[in-house]
Figure: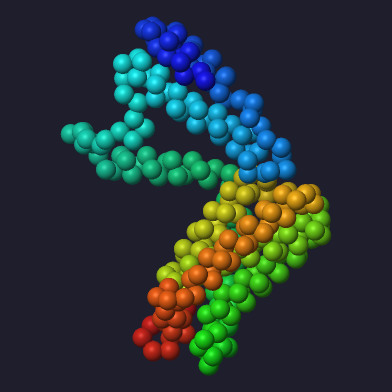
Length: 272
């Protein structure tokens, strides 16, 4: 709604300082906009509006029109025309520094690294055990390895009951919820044979979660609202359906072939 106002009143401004002031006022208008706030019971929609995501998209849209009114072309993905002074090593240095900057919160970083490596290594051991134990029943070894290891991964979170005040119902929700991620991470390893891939995703999930809630906070929350039930069903149900889809056709055959490699059945290589 502010696009016409901004274009008509801010577009003609030529002075750089006055433009700076207008951007400051626009940031106040959009940055804290919560007029579209939705009931907190609908956590995803509430987060999109209350946290200002809609306002941010609105500002991005208005910027396209405003900068054009100033006589420029707004392009967040500017076409790369290599300058004669461009150096790949400088770009690499920038990317490295930007990455390092993500990880200044050392306790959260190391805690997430520990879980990513430790729990995925434990899962690998479970996968090997299940594959070997059910190897005579080739029709079942992959599903048993996937769902057996995922269920045990979920049950291991029962130990979080009482941790920094986590309630029993919240712990049960966590046990169920984390199984969804486990379904995907198991199949990611079985399909690629690369254990470091699920380690990376496991690390990122825990690291982002730790930054949001703090490592010393309760691991999961449960208020008993209908949205809690919906959220829990979705985060485990959608990955479950995807994992079932992966059990058929060529997708399944890739995992079967990698299972043979994991168990070194052909004597060609060992994944351990």
